[in-house]
Amino acid sequence: MATLGGTDLGDVQSERQSKNTQLFQMPLPTSDSSAAILLDYFGVVRTISVEGIITGVDATHVTFIDAIETICGGAQTGSTFVSSKTGYANKTVFINTFEWTVNAADVSKINYSLTLIEGATVT
Image (cartoon, rainbow, N blue to C red; front, side):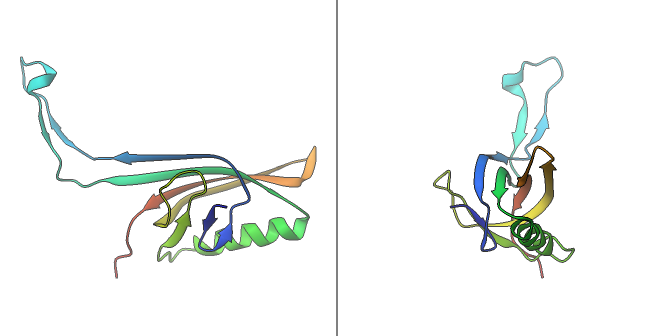
């Protein structure tokens, strides 16, 4: 079971994690790529994308939406993300985007997507 800040993320359909190293890149004129100067001093950013489905009555949907929107209500301090898909669990993350949709053909389900950024709170 995947969770975010203790909130059950329901039926996770996909999870994608990527790490971007933010390399400083300096290709050299008249040289091949093997001669490019690469410096790893900008740090690393992990992005986690989760897509899932919450099934239930309207009250279940409202509870889920309110819980996630409360986390990203403008003063985030970091929430714990626990993945059910990988061995990478218990990451401190901030919500970058939260989107949800409901389809008139099946109002018992909402589809959602979350984009999370791993990091620490600066106080």
